[in-house]
Length: 312
Length: 183
Image (cartoon, rainbow over all chains, first blue to last red; front, side, top):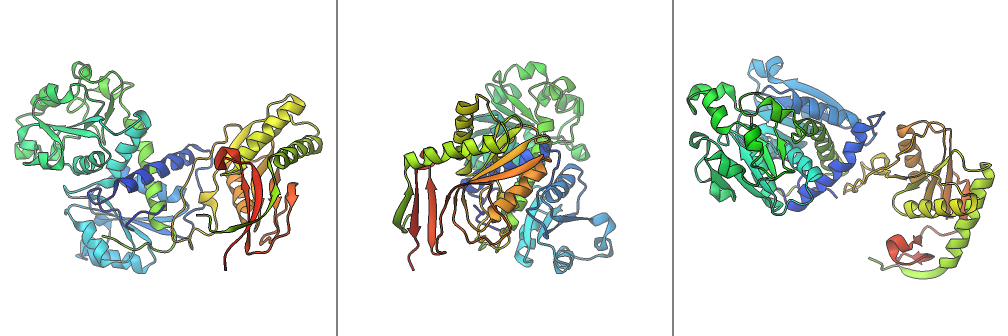
């Protein structure tokens, strides 16, 4: 039942069987989170280090708790309060924690490809928790796990991803994963936020929100990264909200049983209005719980036993 | 999968049925009724065995006892030595354990390691009043100080032999057989 690789660097090179294994395992892990005693002894004696070069609340906490619920020892390092400030390189920092006995390094870094480079230079398992604008596989896996709890099958499921696709690692990982399981993925956003040649990833590209939402089963609303607004990718937040925000009129365009996902943190009133964010169709809180379950599944599948031959 | 040769059949369908009926009576007798008794089957073949026992108990006593399912994968003591992570399944125990006598149900008692893991798994779900243990076959070779309260069949075996309890729900047939692994 182990995965084909000892690392989780992105969904682009993960097989559909492995994705299904992770989702099935997450299903069993979710029960543990709901128990009174939220702990199993499975990863006793294993060490997980989270190495974060960018800010994060939910991903970092989620990995931390996932490790703890499985009885692993978890240590969090952030760039702002470590030797990174003294100029230590990423690989040297990772080798240091490996020398202290880490079995898994969870890395978030602003440079695309950083986790792949790390995986090539250290012996422990590496999990990519977001590398630049490249991939964020655990977010996509938790999105897919959440979808799988509400929808019977990924085959033919219409999933629309809304927003800043250009800068979104969440979108990229979701597209790789969802298309592998047979979903029909569309992306929509202002033309300035759509990277060229998206069609090659197997998705439909829209700039008109109404066309993109018609008949969708799932809408994944991306966060507008306010810090990027200075680049002038759209004239104003108000205009963005009017053209691409999810409101109640647009909710009516979806299938009746459609669900709304958002990776958080939400900008209420910008990409999503509060009435939609708090509606019964929004599954945003479930996503947070499922994030812990998916990360438990990954830690279990990547760390158990003798190291499996690396195919990457 | 089955390269091992079947050496002997220990129980047939009727044999299994009679054994379960006897054990159902034993459970009722030992606990003076089944008011606070619940059955928990250990995945995988303990689950249909627990369901059948519950059915038998209902026929005898007219009381439905709760039945749960335990997956012990996350509690195994050999996870660090296996080359492949075993698949994790769901544990389903949808009743409070607090005031109950739990009868753990499994197909074969061998080294005792599964039972050890099951005890840990169960205690993480709550604090039962007491735990009893039922197995279809006790084949010896214990590696831990564990014994069963209810035994379908005591079966002395060699370590080369494999005891396989087959159940209709999973294997299309009810029987207990001994096979021998090739050298």
